[in-house]
Image 1 (cartoon, rainbow, N blue to C red):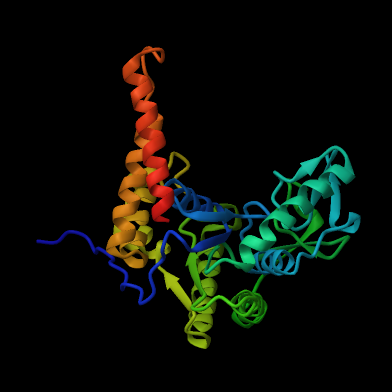
Image 2 (image 1 turned 135 degrees about the vertical axis):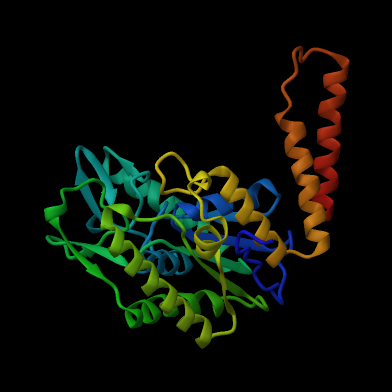
Length: 312
């Protein structure tokens, strides 16, 4: 007897290789998948604007990084003594306005060549709700704990998402001489509970419909069912963190396994296993680091790193 509905995504016709550059933009679930890719030896860039959730802010990030479009002082707002960006996560901040701009623009500078030379762009959509700062009429990538009466809240419709995000995705796909570029869209299983339980569900539904339309418009866009894996496959609060909103480490590992089976071939999977072994060796903490056995252990790590670099 089967007591759960296991989701096994259809194997992608195009597989990700370790030599491929990968850019990831979107919600905090992007950070989860990005960390897994990094641990397994992939050349990646994660969230050049920090964690952002809505399609408009994600689209803006893609455009600005792809075009190396730097921010200026009009793009910043001062909140509780810190300068922050309307478009960025609060991690990008400084008490000095010029320093804040320097931090932001240096990241655009460093991410620009990676994005334009990435074969894959992984987008994780978090919410279809947007918050517009009333005074500046700017859509916020993050509200920076500014009082809610300073914003207008609006639910994006399907056409708005498809038009805005579709243009940025096309910019990425057509912006280099790389062949077989691909965009992978996933919808974050993290619930935006502060929007309201029904509002969160409506938001996720809009994201699903918009994503479906984008995939139908361009076969270079593919969907990966992170949301469904958590909601319909795992479907149990034991797979959540203590806040009951974010997937647990075990759930993320499970989703990662599905991602691997969907987008990696046998050779890539085997190479990932060797990177996992390397990470375990690096995480080993000796009782006494001044022994011959530990020095040999370090030599083995160095040798394995050299071997893996040759194979990428």
